[in-house]
Image (cartoon, rainbow, N blue to C red; front, top):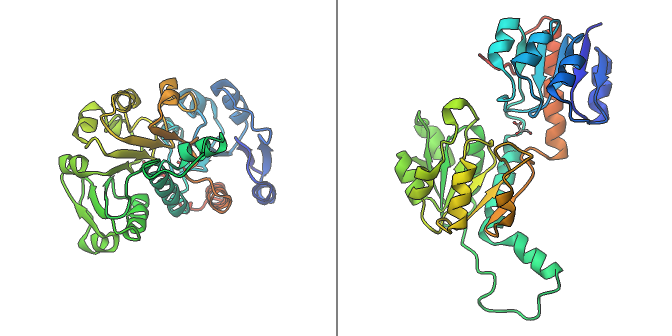
Length: 319
Ligand code: DGY
């Protein structure tokens, strides 16, 4: 029987299914392992179900001499050294598609909450400060008929664009490769140049997978193109946005606000975010619904069973 490792806590039904196929070691305590500990746990394993935050760098991969399948329960895999996996002949898989709609839901929730100051207004009410209704209190920005600018029109970007139709939004997007006309029609989205995308945005959503090529793709020059009334919403990955540049733009009120689910160096996000009243912060919960996390884990199990059974996995990472 193949030995496998589950690096972080998963639902019991996931472990039960794994147990029917493999000898399983699972980190149900959910301790955050160091790279050294992770390497030790992987040393005698044929496969692993990993997470988006495990430090699967070359030093860990190179010590996992039996490992044949690395199946991450995430769509993003920028925490995995693919070159090291390739050298070691390890198949890497991820969990695309099953989380698209759930992540788009969160993007829209953040967009709405940021525009209408839902979180500070609720906090203020709880603090017992609501004495009287006021004509000019808690004035937010309209979402309906506003311009939604999406950088990167992959599956999650498309799911967000479809939601925007319900709010009669104008949807602009920029991709290196323009989508075909049928897809543009389905998303009611118009391709524009990058500068136009930034300059026209009421809400800017970067929706790109992280890679070195898109590191800080939204930095000081891009933020300078935004209107003072614009808001940035990031549910993609830390590192796509230059957090220091964003903090400066928010501190100087050069943009109206931001809503962020992902950060550079998370969970140790830049503490200056915490002092700002024009940013909404959530702890990387884009795909966090019960149903979607189960689908992600089960897809990862499908992948593991396929690879260790000598079959092609349903969702391989191609590299
Ligand atoms: C992903 O799937 O990459 C998410 O960010 C982790 O849930």
